[in-house]
Image (cartoon, rainbow, N blue to C red):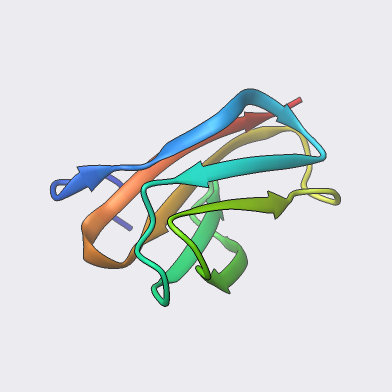
Length: 79
């Protein structure tokens, strides 16, 4: 899985996070996927706004990668 984000970068905050993160720079209606450090898909959703708050309760502590339509990507850490 390529997380290079060759077409742009997403802003993901707060980082490190606990409970929820805000992902900014999305295209409304685009598919967004969150992967763990092992490359496993852990969450997917459709963006309904350019900036969206995402519930990350239940995700184990570690590094996560966000991949969105158009080659956009970002990372965040769950504490």
